Length: 376
Image 1 (cartoon, one colour):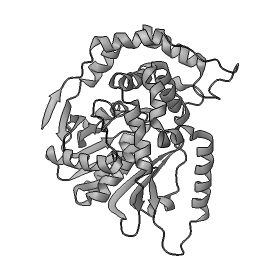
Image 2 (cartoon, rainbow, N blue to C red; image 1 turned 30 degrees about the vertical axis):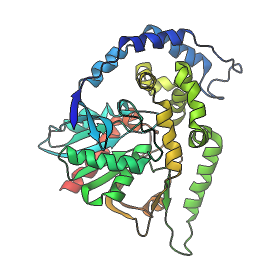
Image 3 (cartoon, rainbow, N blue to C red; image 1 turned 120 degrees about the vertical axis):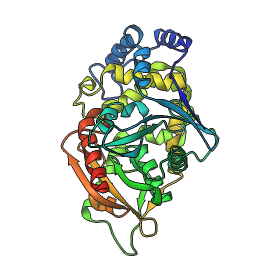
Image 4 (cartoon, helix red, strand yellow; image 1 turned 60 degrees about the horizontal axis):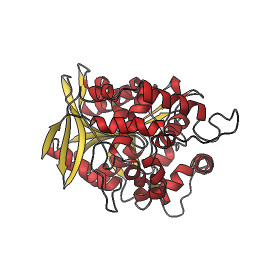
């Protein structure tokens, strides 16, 4: 069953948020350390002031409600999604999946770029992953990207799309990959701007990685030793972390915004990439839906469910990879080709982990180019 909805948060939740913000107990910091030890104290205080005095969630709601919002009951789970029909002479269905620490809001800039092309466009389906945004939390073990892939396929079939395209970054790349692994007959093609963190390429007997691949694996290890503390905690003990983040809006904000700073091409100034309204819209969504724990535990669930891709599970569906320069660590093409049928590989000299927000025009052009080539 699919029901059209309007997003409208009770005012009490917004009033309570401001009350909590005014009670923030701030930590100290090493003088002039900026973002060296985590989220900058001066910037977080600036963001708090904006959150209390200027940010308007109702404006965000209005932007969300510009597009058709629905809730579908899929296998007993309530899944929120946007569904926007393409205006082109030819349109194909495309389901796009967000990642962490973002939400379906990540895709908002792409909607007009992908639906309004007069020649070729998409019927966009943009769901919130279970435990994110307005989708239901799954309080049973096993809610990983493969579980979500099964829900997404059922959703697309329910919408009348027996053949469709998939796209994703971050966890969305894992969901998209899992769809192609489980339902290859339903998938036109896959476009990824990230390689799933739980992707494990299958090697032939006595085969070894190339020097380029080994260099990448070394760089990945170095990156995790420097930046991966969040991942280790969310992989192992997400509930312990959630007590603080679910109770303190500034704690939640710092945990999320530090990643937006560190993973984007902001060159030391986060405002060069994201507006305060964009940052706070996403954090507020996590706050009012109380989904920080249900979102973080996807790290734990995925760690127990590797995507082993290779000889017997090779993804034959056509694949496009969009590599934005400041997305790191990013594997070389050879490493990805061990599991994916790559038909298009694009290297962009800019952009980071959030290209749907950082470089929406470049990402949209790459998506259009790939799927248009498949439909000729």
